[in-house]
Image (cartoon, rainbow, N blue to C red; front, side, top):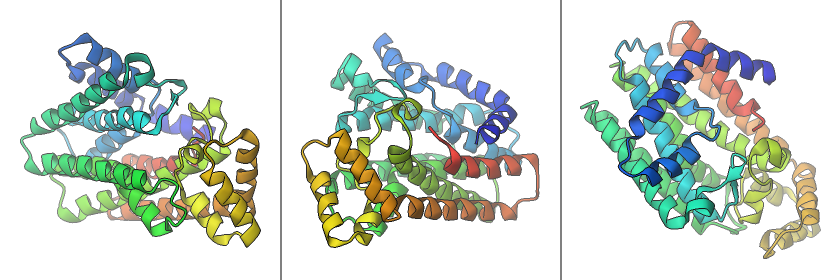
Length: 326
């Protein structure tokens, strides 16, 4: 994993530096507080995979313009906006190892800065004068909102199915990564079949990425994760490891799992017991297996492109989506 991470990020260091510059240059708020709140979430250690994917997909399709770095900031601004809002909804304390924005500046400021970032995305997208690009950004924002609402209404719902879970993560996570890949192809004026191949690649990566993220809540530690482990469980979010294990558990163990899930607060002891159930009933291994299947699917969609350094980087990003530890 460390070798993959080092090789991947070393090979795109120039692109990542350009993205960092563009994020600073294009934030362009009117008030200092907007900068402070936005920078708190934007520059707290994110890997920039979404903007990087847009840039690489554009390059793979032969893009030769100069707007790719600026446009790529849309995906980081969108992501940051949702994190600001989600942390309030979830009652989170930490994000990437730091206090959440609303704990420092208050919920009102965090919500409004999130709104500003969403608006900034549309302004930057509009500069392309490409209605397809603007439409994709608008559709992403709508889908992500609906995904979060769907997850909210299903909190602590022990009847949440695997298919519903997949629909939630498609909307709240995967469409943003899918959109980054699609727009990379769009700005390069790629033919329809190549646009679709990269959109399918991005969707598969996004689903695998979220499954891996859900696994980290049970297999990582707080220092590596940058937030408290077990947060999903304590917030009443049923993710795939839980959904699968609940379905497989015998009657006594299922009853104990339900007791923990429905408790007003979950002790460290109960959390450790719950993790044991996830391993016992293959919730962890099943999720890893399914995420890996999506990674392999993602790679297969790149077969429409000739072998190249850029295609290889996209293949390695697919592996990284599953193998990451934080």
